[in-house]
Image 1 (spheres, helix red, strand yellow):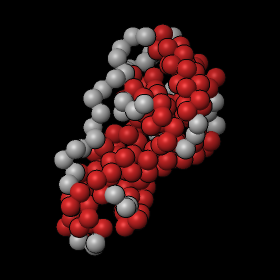
Image 2 (cartoon, rainbow, N blue to C red):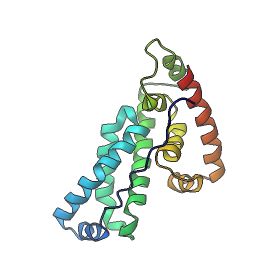
Image 3 (tube, rainbow, N blue to C red):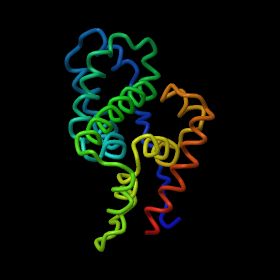
Length: 177
């Protein structure tokens, strides 16, 4: 496969759990700082999972984080929690967008072989079905293990393994066409 999908994950180890706790207690400045720190990560993840709906997915994911923040029990696990909220939101919006434009995998593969070709890896990823795109992004771009992906998506590890296998094959086909 041409190109390298793996990137250094951006887990924002500098997110201060005390700032998270202050935001949970209603400190508006702490909440503003927290959302400012989280926004680039949320945006990047949404852009990879739901490229056609990235702006809406980012907005909805940050709103979901804001609304559910008081329920977060372990402030030190903020990034794992934010990733789960963001992934679920991005998947939902990507699927909604795919339904709206009535795109199926056949259309995606045919479009990939157009004269314009593929611009980059993100373009190739965007051509995959959501279920394949999300596992590939979480594995190669976020560096999650199969078990972590299964936990994030709420599916069995075996399902993650089979989706990864199909996603890699589909990516290779799109990339090489």
